[in-house]
Length: 408
Image 1 (cartoon, rainbow, N blue to C red):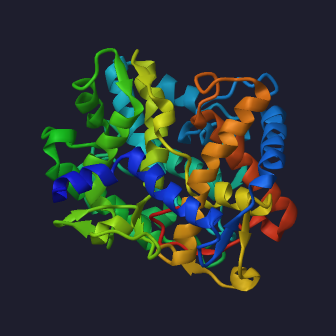
Image 2: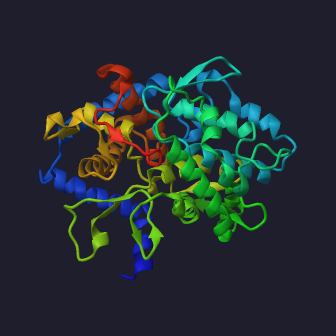
Image 3: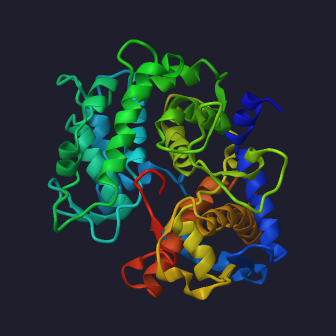
C-alpha cells in the first residue's frame, strides 16, 4: 500500500473501528497491560444509559450529540438569539456563520480542568467544563473576537485568527490566578494554526476571505441532495489536518489524533497506529445540523464512531465493563499518547458500539431510529458524567489525563 493510501485509510471511520476492535480482541483475550473487559456488565450498563436517556428525553426524541446542545444550556435559547442576528443573511451565508462558530467552539472544547468556570454576563449564570467553554466561545464569537471585520463580527477569518493573542483568549474565558483554565497556550496555538491553514488550503477554504465557513461551498460541490456523514469527516480531516501540533506523520502529512499501541503488530510502523479523530468527529457531528438546515439529507450516520473521551470512557470503567489490572494507576495523570490512555480510548470506541446495540435491542429500535450520534447524546456522555459525579468529588474522570488543550 502506498503512503497516500495509508494516510487516506487512517483518516476513515473504518480504520478507527478496525484498530480499536483489534485492541478490544486483545482485551477479551486478557493480553493487554492495563485493562480487561467484562461483557457480563453490558446489560446493566445499557439499562443505566436508558434510565438517563428517559430522564432527559422521556419520549426518546433525542437530538444529535453536537456542540449545538451546549449553546442552549441554562434554559437560554442563544441559537434563537443568533438566528435573529442573522435574519438578513441568505440560508447559505447563515450556514457559513454556523460553521465558523461550530469549528471555533469545538476547537476550544478541550478539557477545561476542575477549577475553571465562566460567568455569563447576559444571564448571570455560571457554567463549567464543556458547557462553560461553549458559552464563553459563543459570546466571544458574537462579540467579534475571531473576526477582522468590525462590520461582520459573527465570523472567524484567517487574518484575525493568526493575530489572536493569549490575552484575548484569557479575557474571553475570564482566566485569572483564581480561575485557571487548562491549556490556554495549546488552544491559542490551535487557532493560530487554523488561521494559517485557512490561507494555505484553498481547495477547501477558498481564496476570497478564507474562513472555516467556506467549507460549506466545498461540501455542496460533493452532494446530490444527499451527503454522507463520512464525507463531512473527510473534509474536516483534509481541511484541518495540519493544525494539530507535534503529532505522528507519514510523508510529512500530520495525522492528528492518532497514537501508537505497541501490541498491534504488522510489517509497517503505521500498522501500530490507532486513529481516534475525536475532536474531528465531534466537529463533524456539529456540522451536520447547519447542512440539514439548508436542505441536505445526511446519510450514513452510523459510519462515524463513538467519541473516545473521558465521559464515555469513564462510563465503561465506572459501570465495570472495563477493569483496571493495576488498580493504583488512577493516582497519577497520564499523557494522551501513553499506552494506558490509548488502550482506554480504543476500548471505549469498541464498547460504545456494543452499548448502542444493546440499548436498541432493549428499546426495540433500529439503528436508523436511534443512531449512535443520538445514543451518545441521550446517552452515554450524560450517563458518564452522572456516575462520575456520584462516585468522585467534582465529578472527575476515573483516570486523569494530561491535556494540552488539543485532544479532549
